[in-house]
Image 1 (tube, rainbow, N blue to C red):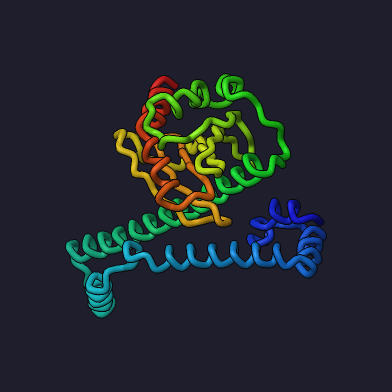
Image 2: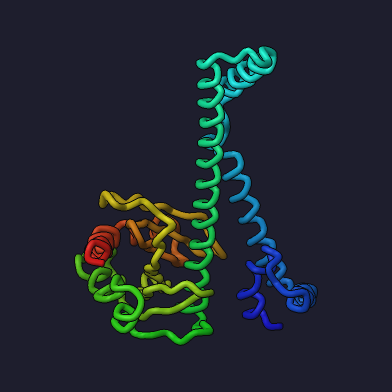
Length: 273
């Protein structure tokens, strides 16, 4: 196994998704490759931080005062045994519904958190394997062709990136195409700024998101992945990522410059399809 093979399998290895034979190959490679051991440790550490951040998020914690009231109320109901009035039945039902609703919200937020992590990893992986190392398994295709076949947001994507003149001075257009990383298709515009390649990635997230419908898209500076800086924003059915080796502020400023024209372009496509 080579290092490039390990990079493609590392996330599946951490998720215990590999066949036994492949698992053994990964372990054997790790025994002899310090660089990949370091890479694996970094990915494992990032996952642990994300899990901890999600589990301890204040918005997901049950209010202690509410929990105390609910416990006391259920104790009272239990002691009253069969002497339940209609009002108490309604109160119990309401309490149960609230608890269930809180559980549903927590599960939905958990799914959303996992989805964001997966998108971040895919965006960073595509920047690494496509823009920097040119080692994708599937051939890249023209953006216009991809727009006709897969997603109309890719049509005129370069114009949407470059048209308004809001990008920092000195940015150059290097290339544009559509590519696939681990089953996810991206519209990929590659820029160059201060000697660094910058990937602008657009991907469909239909069914995973309800943001962006108002036209006010929050730009998020995401957790660093594999030493790459990520910033992204979302429309109703698409996510746009800016990935580079620049500083966080430089990478974020590019995303902020791109957001108005790209959001408008993508929203126009979403309304028309």
